[in-house]
Amino acid sequence: MPDYLNKIKELEDLIAGSKYNKRTQHAIGMYKAQLAKLKEKEVTRGSKKAATTGYSVRKTGDGTVILVGFPSVGKSTLLNKLTDAESPVGAYAFTTLTVIPGVLDYKHAKIQILDVPGIVQGAALGKGRGKEVLNVVQNADLVIILLDALHPEHLPVLQKELYDSNIRLNKKKPFVKIRKRAKDGLRIGRTVLTPDLDDETIMTVLKEFRINNAEILIRDPIDVDDLIDVIEQNKSYVPSLIVMNKKDLVSEQKLAAISKQTNYDIAISADQDSDFVELKELIYDRLRLIPLFLKEPGKEADMKEPLIMFKDCTIRDVCSKLHKDFVSKFKFARVWGLSAKFPGQRLTLRHMLKAGDVLELHVK
Picture 1 (tube, rainbow, N blue to C red):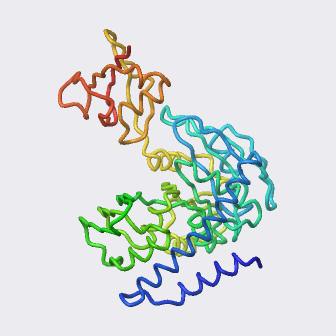
Picture 2: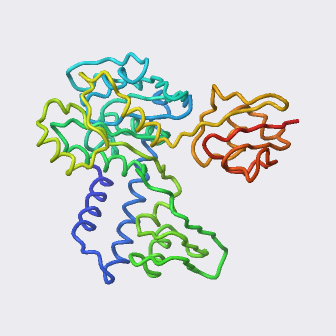
């Protein structure tokens, strides 16, 4: 085993064998910082390799969903049922050797769904083609973890591989600002309590990353792992769905037990089911998509073909999606709907829109 893998295992064992409390907090923080730096070197190597192997897909449509799972879990079958793709299907491992795209057309949204090769344990550190696959996942708007009802124990393995590849599932990026300075040491300010993260631990972790002079402002409750993520600034915060496939192969009693074990979102039989409306609705909702309607000045709004955007989008986001020059040529916009104080309110690029809003853009 290479030296760096031995060091990674040594640190992981140290962390796993240490009981977290006030006395050990800063030591564990230092171990975690050292571990993060080692793993980041490996992920960076994998990302550079992936960039040269053609293992990338251009994002298209209104959102990108990636199917993640062990080999032969049923990703290709599910992709073919949901979209117009023709991904190879076979009853053996590693049927899919490249990234296969398909498009799900639902509620006027064009949702890109990608079928990637199966992930195995150790993928984040290079086993199989795991690094290339996980590099693609980082650019997703939603991750679907597809599990086999006969192997629910695969869930924590997949979650760990995704975590080790800098993917943070169902988490929001914490509000922590680190402003480096030339001198005066470290100054820490908080607007919330962080019972699992004291000043000594914060300083230990920062110094491990060679940050010796900085102002730190913490506005969200965080732990040492969150702090390291903020320092590294290379994490992807992505929503996810857990889909249990092959439910027809287990009893209802067993499926109920699996539900408690994995807390899955939905159970399906990709080989048998012909109606995936509930799953499509879950995908749409978890992507946080909303419809907006466009209106030309002096004309009626087009209420038949909505523009699909992500929730909490701004007028700037709409302009960017419609045309590359609309932001630079923007004059003002008028808005009708829930986000406007009154019908036809004149607003700027920073205004946040809500579902069902009607938008009239005025550009130079």
